[in-house]
Image (cartoon, one colour):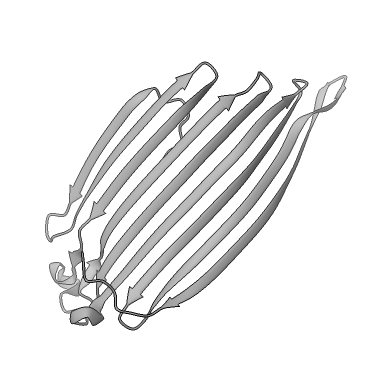
Length: 212
């Protein structure tokens, strides 16, 4: 998961590894962030790769006789985040960001052969364009449009399917000083949102791949 940043200057690499004292599970993460800023804006880019090996049921005494072959599946994840902001004038600032996250799970169940393999691939995309406008130095109007898509492919010998979810979201809000009393300014905030969500499930025939 990324902590969203907009003012990193330079590069920040990161490598992590973890494992267990008993069993074959292990995980490592490699990440790289790069950022730059200038007088009127900034840009930020981050990538992360995460890999986990499976933990077999036989590696734990409480599950060594279980019909389930793995307590934790093999998992691979890729994530990418990009953000750009640019001031057009003292009153208007534009910003855009993009997020991709992909995850692949490979599970071995209690059955032998291809019938015991289950695969799941999830890909998520999210993009946002927005603007902030300062009006008369007492009001700020913010608007944004966001498009998102999530695709999940589940594969198994008994049947496979792909689920696709999508969303389009438009937001606008305004806040500022409505009038001033003797005790001080009275502020007002207004906002609205338009949203459209969709979902589709597509059956797919065929056995999953045995590649790991």
